Length: 114
Image (cartoon, rainbow, N blue to C red; front, side, top):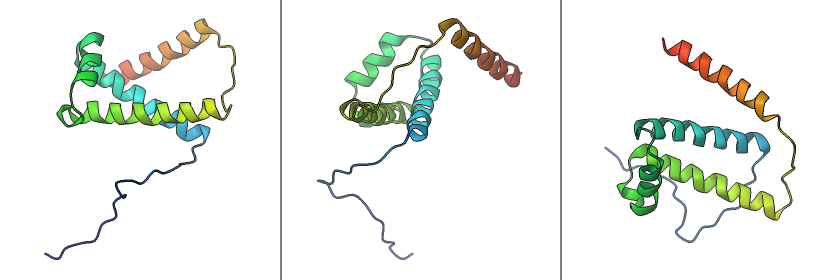
C-alpha cells in the first residue's frame, strides 16, 4: 500500500475563523447534546462529571468527554471574541414559555423512543 499525503496544521499555527450565528448555535446545540448524553450516563452526578473533565488528561477522557471538552473550548472562544467585538445582544426571554417549549421537545423525543 502506498503512502498518502495528508495535511496537518503546523505546531505554531493560530487561525482566526469567522463564525456566524447559525454556526455558533449549531456548536452550542452539539455541546448540549453531548452534555445530555454524558451527564445521563454519569447518572446525573455533576461533581464527578466536572471532576473528570478538570482532573483527567485529555487523552484519558473517553471519546464523548473529549468531544464535549473540545466543543466547550470552541464555544468559549466564540463567546470571548463576541464579547470583545460587542457582537452579543441582550433580549428578554419568557422563562415559562421557554420551559413549555423545552417540555414539548422532550416529550416528542420521549415518545419517539417508545
